[in-house]
Amino acid sequence: MSYTTINETNIEDLKNIVGHANVFADLESRRTYGKDETEDLIFPPDVLLKPENAGHVSSILKYCNEQNIPVTPIGARTGLSGGALSLYGGVAISMERFNKIIKIDTNNQQVTVEPGVITQILQEEVAKHQLYYAPDPSSRGSCFIGGNLAENAGGPHAVKYGVTKDFVLNLEVVLASGEIVWTGANTLKNSTGYNLTQLMVGSEGTLGIITKAVLKLIPLPQKSLLMLVPFYSAEKACEAVSAIFRAGITPSALEFMERDAIDWVLKFVNEVHMPIEESIQAHLLIEVDGNHIESMMADCEKISEVVQEFGSGEILFADDETQKAKLWMLRRKVAEAVKSHSIYKEEDTVVPRYSLPTLLAGVKSIGKQYGFQSVCYGHAGDGNLHVNIIKGELSDDEWNKNITPAIEEIFKLCVKLGGTLSGEHGIGLVQKNYMTIAFSDVELQLMRGIKNVFDPKGILNPGKIFPDLKVSRD
Image 1 (cartoon, rainbow, N blue to C red):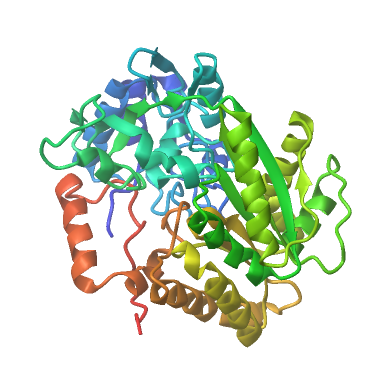
Image 2: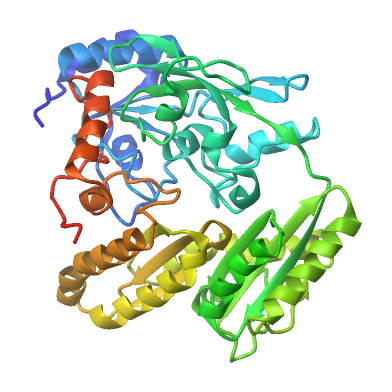
């Protein structure tokens, strides 16, 4: 792609649009906003803007569209697919000043919110009204609602309540042309025209920039029970997942952690101390929630019966809120622990949940073939397995030679099993060249056509989602 190189005149024009105090061209700011949590990648923009309202965003996009300047929308920079990296330089738009919860509508159980609101803060505020916003990625204490919308984020409680898309009613979006549109209606049902709202969710900032969102809320569950179930076989732990649902139980969370994941977290955090029997190879963290403790206890008893059929060890029931918090910390800190341990690649694979044992076995087999160790964990109830490929003792040459074909094999296995490349992290920069494994040329052309309608000049978050290279699907 060929874009206009930003010069001093452009920067002065942008200052006139958003104000001098909202324009940052210094190297430190550009480098800080040129990276997210994706490996060690960094792509600084030429200039960083921090607009304060939709009018600012509209004027910025209109100007950049006319000048053919690439624009990268940026949230909290917690992403894992490189979606917020300014691959072609240009203008970066940080949405951090869009941080207002505009209205909590308790009568209709919905909330209008700006994209720079931190997910956990939104959850805590609506909880004061006995309402619940369920999507809760591991980074919920720092990630923005806008980023969750861009990636269609999930989290542990998606298994019962759904992912971000299931809570979105309506969006205010600024298009590449600078026009401001609403995509839907603030209603629970809408069969009026194309579903532009759902098209925007998961589009990774390539179709428009979200400036407001109307989100559905549900009644806040009053109670929860949490159990940590050890298994002597990781594959048996995965087999137990589908069996729990087939027994008629839908947990509010069902998380998988293989042995290395927990071992690394226990070394990484000081707050949790938990002896683990040497022969234990994996754990399931299982939560049930609701308002009636008797029915919840009955679910836990049934779960206990099911997991025993798959060789579970002694189950640990969390006694109080403190112990619950520590067990959840074990799960939520896995990614940080792995990242601190070694150079790694994280894949966000997803398959139908019954195929989870086959996926896990396949990942381990591919690891042996290519000489790498993997640490696996994730949202087992959704069939969503995070595969961390560890460089470990591999030489740079071995790592660079083997990593791409190994990832190709993992993704081909996912597709063969009826799954796909990403469950919640998105495609962004780092997964785009594998898209031909999941989609045919016709399917990708349809997506490119949609992109062209919304963004004819290709200025919005260029270099993301669509492949530069073709990887065979066979």
